[in-house]
Amino acid sequence: MTEIAERLEELQDQGLHRRLRLVGGPQGPLVTLDGNQVLLLCSNDYLGLANHPRVKGAAAEAAMRWGAGAGASRLISGNMQPHSRLEKRLAAFKGYESALLFGSGYLANTGTIAALAGSGEVVFSDELNHASIIDGCRLSRAETFVYRHGDVEHLSWGLQKAGERAALIVTDGVFSMDGDVAPLVDLVTLARRHDCRLMVDEAHATGALGPGGRGSVAAAGLSGEVDVVMGTLGKALGSYGAYVCADRETTDYLLNTARSFVFSTALPPPVAAAGLAALELLESQPDRVGRLSTNAATLRQALTDEGLAVGGGETQIVPVAVGDAKATMELSGQVLERGVFAQGIRPPTVPVGSSRLRFTVMSTHRREELQHAARAVGAAARELGIGGDRHAVAQLAA
Ligand SMILES: *Cc1c(COP(=O)(O)O)cnc(C)c1O
Image 1 (cartoon, protein in one colour):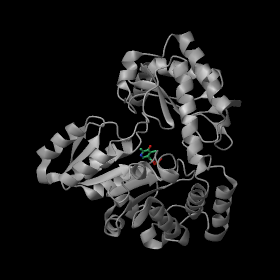
Image 2 (tube, helix red, strand yellow):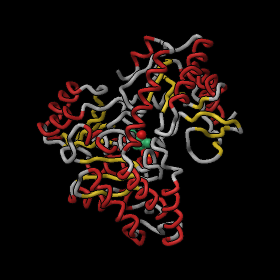
Image 3 (cartoon, protein in one colour):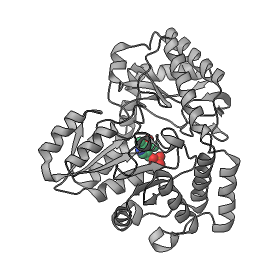
């Protein structure tokens, strides 16, 4: 047996092996999965924009006008009107002076964090931050102080210890696997007090929280107070790519020094055009955001009524605690048999012992669909004798 085969077998044994599944057709409340129609409850296309005629039309038009690809990094020959128009619009939407596009959220986080902190400095990172933030911290070569989830006292202690070496605090706005929101007001206060930059990742917050879907920073009334706001175009905005909003000096600095910006091809023009069309739709139809939060509340309530341990806050990300990785995958398999497609989330995405079934709601789900899904999950959990695990729910962010 090769070493790789051995490692794969180990993953199998631990219930940690992953595989791809083929989804037929575009994202929507219902999709076909391996030939069967299922209710989709694991897409980040929160507002149903990935398949919206205007978004698709904008992409098609841009493809005909600007071509399929950008041809180079934007600093070489790839900077086109769709990119700069989208940046202007994003900056205005978020209430910032300037925005800079990146190829993806992963690239935005790794490039930005590594540009804003370096060796001899300290980055402060919430323990439940997204993997792309963790990797950005690693790439920066700064010392990383991982503070306990949402624990501002722990963070404050770390900041005091670091003194002048404190360079950057970085956090998810809405935590991607738990659905709770970072204590942003306290983070701004601490950043000010310690003369340290604050960066917030709004991948799951843009289009979902705040006035008109402007995000968690806007929801907390902190637009402009948070130094760097990162967001993605691939989730609620239905397309692909990411952006960083900040003052012009900072985005100019990132344009010059963020390696994932400098050394990577620009977003394809159809993708940028789709992002812009989605943003325009969000601005003209803000009721989509309200429907998303109503749907989130419906699913949370329906799952709770089934006796399941629902963690997190009030957002569209709804985790149901299981604990064990294998049991989680069994539950997700049983739920799928009942026509509901949700993802079991296991280590290394979440800490060991905190595996969960994670639901994401879309504004386009009907109330009955969400209630049906909750009943299916409840029935599957009872059959397997899992769910409602008090110990496991304690492991979810409260
Ligand atoms: C999805 C996600 C990213 C990565 O964004 P991509 O555009 O998918 O690369 C970064 N941060 C968080 C919190 C995310 O959920």
